[in-house]
Image (cartoon, rainbow, N blue to C red; front, side, top):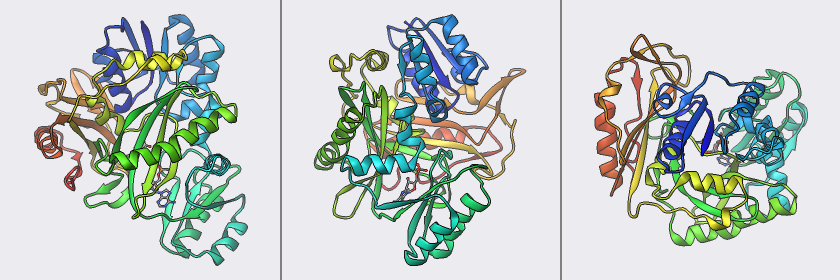
Length: 420
Ligand code: AMP
Ligand code: GLY
C-alpha cells in the first residue's frame, strides 16, 4: 500500500513508525513531516489544504491518515473523500465534536452522556451576569479550537471574568465572533481513552494518562502535554465497563442517529470522580499527543490494516492486540522557556547516538537537519518512550536517556510516572 500521513509532530512520527513496520506498507509519505519522520517516510514541505489535496491526487494513495485537528476542522477529510480516496479521520461534521464545545455539550445532552452541566454565552455581558450568580469555582471554555489553551479552570469570580474578558474583549482566539461555554468544575482523576470507529463498528484502542502542566507536581501553566503513562493506571475492568456503557456506546449510537458518518479515532477526555463515576470532559477527534507515543509501543498487531479497515468500512473484521503485561512511559523534552517564549534553532548534539528498538524510541516533534546538525524548531521537541514490565522500569530508561541527551536548552519534568 501507499500511505500519506498529514502532520509534523511526534504524534505523526509514532503513527508513521507503526505504519512503516507493517508488511503491507510499500511507500510512506508524510506532509510536511520533520527530520525524525524523514528517516522512515518521504517528507515534503507542504501544509496547506489545497496543496495537500493536489499532492494526494498525484500520488493516489491507498490510505491518507490525518493527524492534527485543524485539518479535520477545515474538512480536509471530506474533501479527500469526494475524490474517492480512503481517509482515516472524520469529515468536518464529526470533527465538530472537538472543534465546538457548544456542539459537544448539545450532543452529550441529546444522547444522555454524563458531562459537567453547562451554559453557552454569545457575549461578555450575559456571561458576566451568569457569573455574578454562579461565582465559582467554575470552568470557562472558548468554543473553538485553541491548541489546548482555550479552557480556563477558575477558582473564583475574578478569574472567570478575566477569562471571559480575554475571549470577548481582548479577542485572543478569534477577532470576529466569540462564544463561551461555562460549566461546573469537576474534581477527580483524568484519563484519556481512545476508540476507533468506521461509523458502524468500533474497536477500543487503549488508554493513557497525560501530564498537562509544565512543572513537577502539576504546577505552572498548561502545555500540550509533558508526558504520558499507558495504560492509564486508574483504569480497572469495572471502570472500563462503565465508560463503555455510559460514554462510548452512547457516542457511537448518537453519531449514527445524527447521521454523522465518523471514520477515525475518538479520544475521550474523562474525569473520574471520587465515587468512581466517569464524566466526559471533552472529545477530540484525532489521536492524543503525547498519548499515542506511549500507546504505540504497546501495540502488537498490524496498525496499518486497522486504519485501512476503518477508512474502508471494514472494521468489523479488524482487531487490535497489545503486547501483554507491558507498560509504557513517554517523557517530553521541551525547549527551556516553553510554553512561553523560547529560543529556536538550538543544536541537539548527540541524538543519533541513541538506537531505537521495539521497546525504546525517540520520536521527533520539532527538529530539522541542516549542515549535518540537528536543530530544534519548536517548543516540545522530542518524545522519549520506553516499554517495560513496570512503570518504574520505564521511568529508569526514559530518564537515563533524557539525562544523556546533549542539548543546552533541554527542559523536562522529573516526575512523569513517579506516582504509580
Ligand atoms: P483541553 O480541552 O484538552 O484543553 O483540556 C482542558 C483540561 O481542562 C482538561 O484536561 C481538564 O484538566 C480541564 N477541564 C476541562 N473541563 C473541566 C471541568 N468541567 N472540570 C474540571 N476540569 C476541567
Ligand atoms: N494530550 C492532549 C491532546 O492531545 O489534546
